[in-house]
Length: 153
Image 1 (cartoon, rainbow, N blue to C red):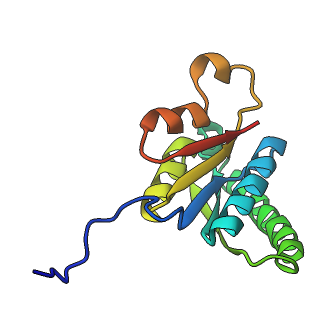
Image 2: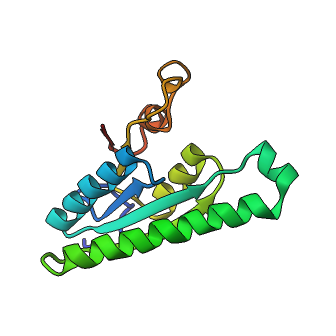
Image 3: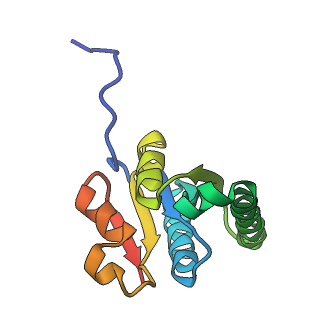
């Protein structure tokens, strides 16, 4: 008997279809984005680059200037991504999209990966020394165990 109803969603059964990469403008996040772009290109997957506008207690007190600066940072990153993708797509086919979310980086990247049904998440290693003790976004994503996570140094 052939059941025509679609089965449950499965991650990575035929290779990744969606690769999510966190991008915050740091050197390690650019390396992660480049790694994720190569992975997505080789697998014919969609590359979803995610920038998270941080929420801070200081931002609540300062109001619009902080929000404006964060929005400008997102626009600058997207422009740099468009330029880099333009150079890459002259040679290779790469499907990509840029998302800007607000919140804490771990929560926003997790939400993006779930919403986009990501098969893989790629992030840069934290460049902050204190994260070795407290835990970085990368460590928290790995510990969540919901997607394969690649941490690029």
